[in-house]
Length: 277
Image 1 (cartoon, rainbow, N blue to C red):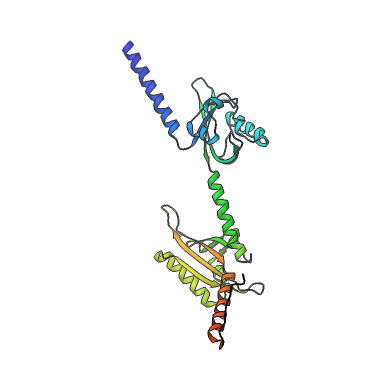
Image 2 (cartoon, rainbow, N blue to C red):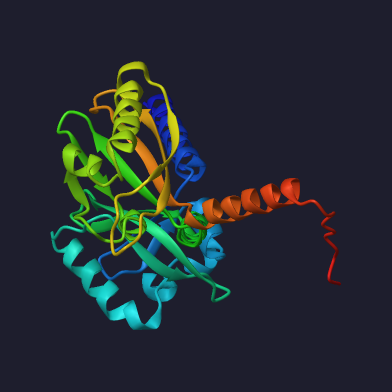
């Protein structure tokens, strides 16, 4: 019997070591809170994300990492979840030990102990850098007058994001039929070019990058750059993802340069260009 007990104890220790190793090796933060909202345990990544040690967190209320204005709401959500309610995975702003706000994605699970005690297991991922990069990309796209679009070949419909709508002068809805999309372009030549590019893209997986002119709208016929490539993922309907960019300014500058070059070539007298500074 003693040897059996020793073996069982050793297996239990090994199992705990395995669980602890997996727990701490996870690439995301995990914490366990009791029914009162106090930390029971957390893994290394959780501590790293918030800048606390385990000693500093264990026994403390989880709202230590929640901004003051959201503490009451977070506590109520925790209590409701412990009582059996649902919690939808979401994005939250929390606070590190040094006061730095960060953005996390969370997912919660309920754990019930053999004695009936209920615990909440929360996994978190720090998405702060990703959010900052998305913001930079959004700013760059806005400055560059670039918008996104998606072509669903099965439904024969085009969907535009808000920036693409701005490029198009907000003249149509953000979801249009294929024929409505073609009507956006100036004439039969432009429409034929984009139509052929889209069909080739779908049937031969050929990406395209075109400069076309839109139909007149409010006395303007802006030039746009339209690009696209096929996204074909397993289990999903293939679509063309692309962007549309207003290139009026660059086209105008190029036109002015051509005029200047022609003047230079045809001038009977030498034209001297100097640096004003």
